[in-house]
Length: 93
Image 1: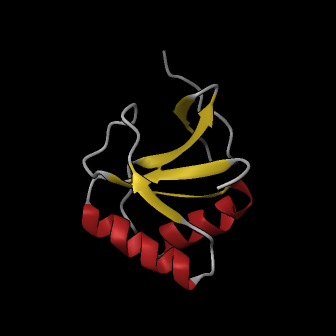
Image 2 (image 1 turned 90 degrees about the horizontal axis):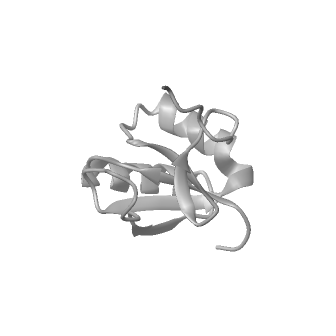
């Protein structure tokens, strides 16, 4: 996918496949791909989609109660968890 994207990581393959179905049904362009090594998750599948679709995808995931590990974006060749607005999450010290 070109441009900035968001990646959803999961702890369960069942939840990843459920999310894939829901997001495809909503006509969000997704790419199901292996979970990057730097993201600790119980499932080897992740879903990537364009950043402009983040709010819609997040709403669908929440309304359908899909269990996820988190939302991530790549910053300087490294994936970091993001907040509800798509920005880096503040690191708790």
